[in-house]
Image 1: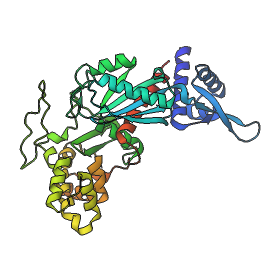
Image 2: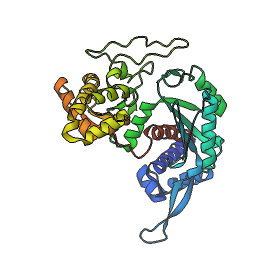
Image 3: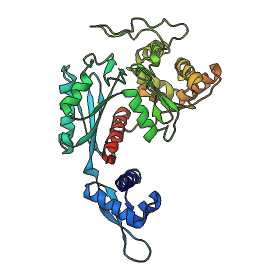
Image 4: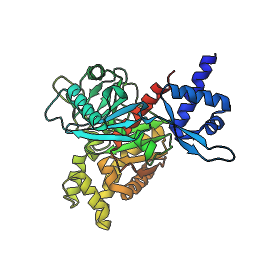
Length: 387
C-alpha cells in the first residue's frame, strides 16, 4: 500500500506541473492535499527519476524564497505528422507541448509509406537535435477512414499506398508506438484545445476543403464509431443528388467521390458553383473569400453554399444535438462570419435544433499537425506518468 500511495502522489504532482507550469512545494501541497513533508518526498522522487527540476524561486512572506519546480522539458519528446499526397509536415515538441522543430518534405514519387515517414521524422529530429529514440509518442494524421481495431487506413482517396499492415510496419521501423488518426479528427482536437471549441465537450467540426469530412466530439472524446467511419458525412444522401455509388474499395480501384453531400460542397463543386455566379477565382477557397468580401454581390453565392452545408449540419444536429458546429478547412475558414451566420439561419429553417455555428479560430498554424502533436502528447504523458 505505501508503494501505491507513493505512485498516486507522484502522478498527482506530475499531472499538476504539466497542466499549470512551475509551482512551489507549498502550492503543490495545497492543490493536491499533500502535507509539506509528503510533497517534499514526492518532488524528491520525481527529481531522482529525472522528471522535475528547480527552475527558479518565488518570493513569499517571511523566510527564504520558495523553490519553483517544473517538469524537465527534455524528459520526453513527441512527433506529430500530417501526411498528404504531395507533402508531409512533421513537428517535434517537448513534453510541455512547445514545438522545437517543424519541417516539410515531398514524397517525390516514393510510394512506400514506411520509408517516407521515417525520412520525415528523421529530418525533423535532426532539426530539433533530438534522437528518434527520445520520442515517446508519434501520431500521424491522414485523410481517410482508420480502422480502430488494426490502426490501419481502410481506404483513402489520396494515399493508395497506405494499405493494411502499414501501421504495424511503421511501429516496427520506428521501434515505438505509432498512432494513425483521421486528419479531421485531429483538427477537432486542436480546435478544442486552442480554438473556437475550447473547453466544449460536445461539438462537431465540419471540414470543407477538397472533400468533406466531419469530426464528432462527445463528452470531450472523439466518437469514431465501430468501424472508424463516424463523420464520413460526404456520403450523406441528400435530395436531388445521386446516391454515392461504387464506394467499396477493390484491388486496384479507389472509391468514387461522386454522389451524396460531397458532390454539392467539395472544392470542385464550390468552384463550379462560383463560376455560375460570376466568381471565377483560381480555387474554391479564393472564390469564397472574394464572395465574402464582395458585399451584396457575393450574397447569392454564399446563400447557396450555406444552404448546401446546412443539409449536412441539420442531419447531424437532429441526431446528436451538439450545440456547437465549427466550420473548418479551407472553404469553411474562407467564408468567415458571412458564411457561418447563413449556415446557422439555414439550419434553423429546416431543423428543430438551432446550433451555434462558428468559424474555426485555429488559423495561425496547421490544425491537423497541431492536433497530431496534442494527441501524441497525451500518450507520452500517460507513459511518463506510469509507475
